Length: 639
Image (cartoon, rainbow, N blue to C red):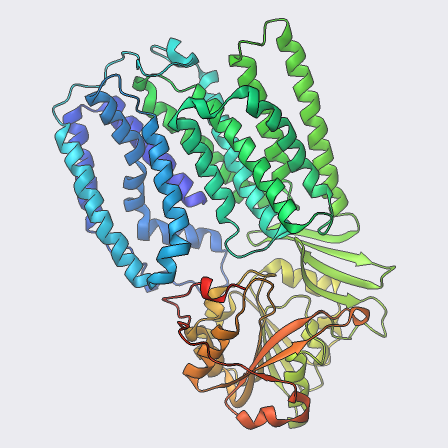
């Protein structure tokens, strides 16, 4: 998100510079040259040289990869909106250009919805790259023809756009700095809110696959409605709704996970999010300047969008140890909208303005205090808190209940009994009757074991360690490692030798020589989110490479929303493995959860043991397309 917002800012800056500083002929030649250069950078498939080792900070690697693979083509694409609108206004004086901004956002929303629902299920990644590159060539021809056609036009005059009727029509030459800052702030608030609320929605309300699409689609929809025509945004309707919405976004974090039904919590959250974005973008639309300031206006919008993404994506993980972004977004949105109304709303007379300013500020500070208090209550009892690129983590101790737990939002990463005599009992999904526990305990008769674990959690599986055993654990998040070592004792009290490898497990396994694991446990899922790259055929090939000939692969597939059985079975079938499903009903008294595990082995006779008598054969699903690094789709496995 930050990369695309930054490139959009550069693209809008280029558009403003080109329109305001260059003659039409020079604009045409420069832009056509850039379009031609982009064609030589196709296709957009990234080089293998950018494959990470898996242990470095991912932020700069991701930004660098995106820059070299799609940087210039996307930069040129990002100039299209303001540049074409400026050319349109130059060619057709008096036409309503701002509706083209609504049209471009409508195209963006269609693409957003089409990709996961149409493109990804139909085309492998390499075909998507080729198809996109072909369409980009058509775009180059279309945009190049527009640039060539307008090379002899007259420069845009300073005449006011007769189709624009708003408060900015008085700005004939120079726009006040206060107006520029207001445009930036009105664009920044929805940007902050979108990223912060998406994080809150996916971590604290419903970690449902693809749910992140909803806030982004609503964000684009508000742009479409507000800029298509100004009749969609009516202050007398949306301002009362804004008050309610800010209250809802403040109130929801004060609730427990199960206080509201899932659909109610999601619905209220998304409706409130939509209203706040609608008001901010509606206020922006009401302040559209005349067309000679069009590119400057869009430049300020892109500055605001970038600053919002930068705040949540870069500053917040370092500045906050908890999810305070949403509280900040609520406060900023309320303050900025209030300032916009204070400057432009004619109903506010000079006498009413001080009362309005004091009242709204006091109300918003009250909401902010409630929101921050809710997050502090949420962290009440936390023994340790931390936040980084991968999200926010907390360790809670519950002395009365007798256990300690690590949480990522509402997702439990592990629990441990506090009582010393029970502390080494495997809990949650790792008890001896569940898949991973069965795989390890049935292998113990062979002597010392070498066990690999993808996804450390709190280190629960180390509880099975015996003298002579080795447990090699792969974990991508350094915060998880620190909390597992400091707040839990599975790693310190185990009798086995432990090795912890920091980094993406699949990338680390690709770099290592065969580890000869007796058991390899794959459990790097975050709640119901699925790291697809750990479930492709190429990933399973790496797992098998690191197993002994009679080794066992245990894959945790517990999921409320996805049925991963076909994914496991298809991979097993391609690699000549026998796959069985182990279901466990859970036991609350032992802090054991309901779980589903898939066990895979080259040795089909291993499943004949009495301990595995309840294992279920995984049947192949007709027509299911196996997941590979080049193709995967969630829709065939949705429950």
